[in-house]
Length: 126
Image 1 (cartoon, rainbow, N blue to C red):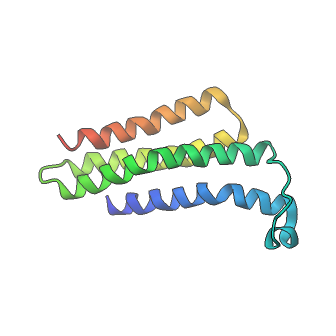
Image 2 (image 1 turned 135 degrees about the vertical axis):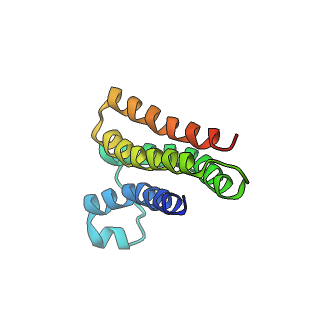
């Protein structure tokens, strides 16, 4: 379980920094390391990456809370919680890639798969 919590944090950090990486590629090192007073409007990819990061920020507290509860609650099914965490983390990585690439229906399916992972984690506590 601890591995998947750490993997989830890694996936989260990647997702949060992705818009900055896209901006860096767009404006270059000189402009990026400067005061950035006049940034260009976010392009399509950066705007999508920002929305994907915001979505991950909304779900990360639930993931972390359920993960820690699975470790701390006596009698919790840690194997089920770990499987749910694995599903959540892997689906979030796929979700970000699909979101940035702009595949609408597939994105919703992958989101639902990740949500099932959270539900599995929650059910492991009862």
